[in-house]
Length: 453
Image (cartoon, rainbow, N blue to C red; front, side):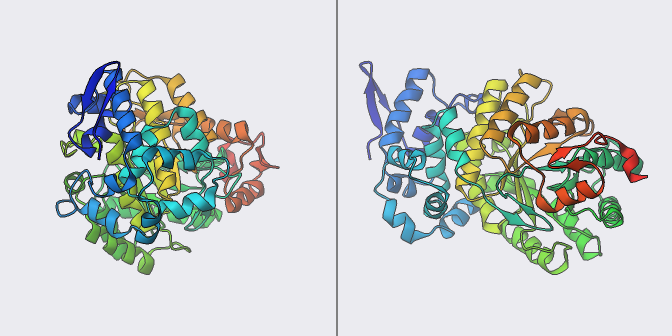
């Protein structure tokens, strides 16, 4: 295994596969803060050259966090299809990139090969790709999942209606839900981030959304994004839950800080399949994002992009309905500006899809980042082109409870219009019945909450 190269008569020596992966990453402020990123553009290029020539077996034999030390590593390796891995283990990372981007390689081939790839191999490939590469590769993959609705069908784009309220006021939440639905947002899930995450409060919000869905015969899912243990308590006490949520990370130390483990997730899935309200078997909703491990000082010397890929390797074990990437949510200490946010969104969508996940993107930013609405809209348009399954729908694009910027109900409608995409099949029929959509386009009644009178 060669970990050195010469560029412009300068010799670059890397200490490990982990070091190569970190220094081959595009510049991110979180990696710089962790002092593991490249110190110059030339060193970054040298790392990419070395990485492109590594064989997949070199990466397999050198996980960035040892198997015996880390539960995420164990889940990734235990779920790997060794037969497929053995077919390709002598490929270089550069050859894997060429295979993925080849015109003759389609979704069936990528779906199969992904089962033999560890998360570090997928991260390594993304590091060798340009933005166009990431969009073209992502476009090839479209993964479906079924809860109460079927997400991921070609030609369709879904949205989570996110009616957060700073005091969990039921009237305010219901007004936001109605507004979102009136613009065609909410077919992925009606998902509330609670201010009060007590079992009693979470149960109240779950019952309210479920009863509203029943009253208006809305084909969608409900979810309250409290900690998974709170949701489990609510479910055991009879609360109606379609989707169970949890934030996940790419190292065991970070997941420990989140208060989550494989055993807990196994228990939650089993409980949802027994007591949840979903018609289908994809009943988990995960959120991820580059930088969570850095913010928790749990990165183990691994770069943010590779850790994000490992998060997807962890996620796929539970066959989720939704995986939402929120890489810009933390702030400038992890992604400094709009350029870094856009790059992270493209990387994450590709890596999630190559893991076989039904991926959504939240091109988010905080007001203390060097990013603005233009950066967010560029990220949104690029990832729509790359085939994201869903986005968030936030009133006015400004989450007044979580204090960050996300896509608005109007953005959601624009994304569909840009590429001629339609809501999820069952939800589109409901919108037509409500007079809100006709022939795949919103009617003049869009935004009119009186449809619910």
